Length: 282
Image (tube, rainbow, N blue to C red; front, side, top):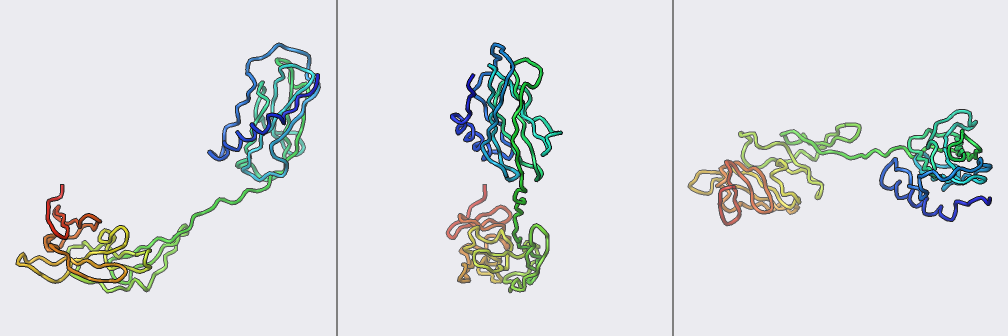
C-alpha cells in the first residue's frame, strides 16, 4: 500500500495550531478530521512517517504540530511520546488513538535536547508495530517581561511628594513637590495630600479629588468671605496657566469641597454647585 503524505492537509493543521497559540499559553491540540470510530482491522503497520510544523531548534513556548502517517495497515492507531535525547525515557504526549496529529506545546519546557517518537499499530494490536523519530533542540524562551512604572505619593505637607519605583518599591523624594499651599488652613483634615499632574509635569497643592479628571483645573477653599453667609470662597485654578478665580456661589459649599467633576463641584453635606445654580444632590 502506498504511504500517505501529511503535507496536503498539513497547512490547515498548522494554522489551527497557530490560532490556538494566540489565544492561550497552553492551547488545545487541533482536532483531527479522522473519525474516532475504529475501522476494520488489517495486518500490522510496516512503516510510519513523522512530520512537524517547525524544524529544530524551537524556542520554549513554541507550539509544534506533529502529523504521523503509517503504511501496511488500515485504520492505524498512533501514540506520541516526548523523551530525552537518548529516547530511553520520556512521557506520553498523546496515548493510543486513531487521531494522527498531536500539538506539542513547549511552554515551560526546559531548554535541552528532546526526541519525539510516533508509534503506530493496527487497531487493537499490542503496541507498537513500528515507530518514527524526530530530534529537537529547545532553546530558552524570552524571560517574562516585568512592567516598570513609578507611582506618585505624598503626605499632607508641602515637599512630601515623591515616586515609588515599581516593582522594586524604592521611594525617591521629589524636591519640586515643595509647593505653596493656598487657602484655608487644613483644620478639617480634608486636604489629603498633594497631586502629581503627569500631563503638565508638576505637583498641585490639593488632593486628587479636587482636581479635574483631565487635569484642566483644580479647586481650593479660599480665605475670603464674599457674602453675608460668612462662608469662605471657593477658588478655581486653570491649568497650566495657573489663572485663579473665585467660583460663583462657591461659598454655598460651607468650606467643604469634596470632588471636582466636569458637571459640578461636589460639597458637604450633600450639595452640588455649578457656576449659575445650586441644587441638592440626589
